[in-house]
Image 1 (cartoon, rainbow, N blue to C red):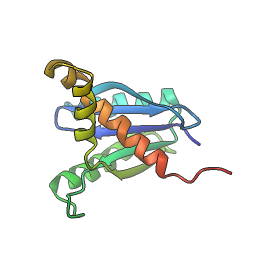
Image 2 (tube, helix red, strand yellow):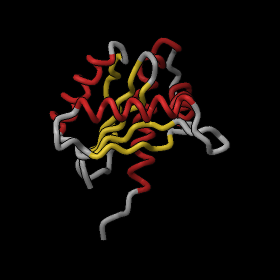
Image 3 (spheres, rainbow, N blue to C red):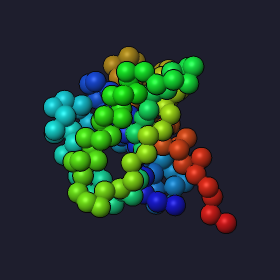
Image 4 (tube, rainbow, N blue to C red):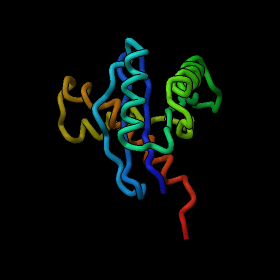
Length: 143
């Protein structure tokens, strides 16, 4: 497997999650403020270097009818700006359907009894963790 990082970009926060080198466990990391974006990209690049990330999975919001709307374009544009901000050779950047990850994260946090304020602090990174787990589960397993 490989070291992978998931990003769930939003307008205020970027959720972040990472997996272990074997791709077995996924851990939410502290969110990164989305603005100013230049600082966010520098922070992401530092995390990528520190963790020796080989793949970055970015949430791609797909509409329920399977089409891409304005939010998907924002994710694609963010992926391109991130690619440009990373040193070469850059890790592989993958856009992955994030449908319902925030809903799933909200459900899990409500089950834990977290307040609105507590949920707000962790929901983006938990969404990124759910996204990363989804991507990892879809990868071919080594024999």
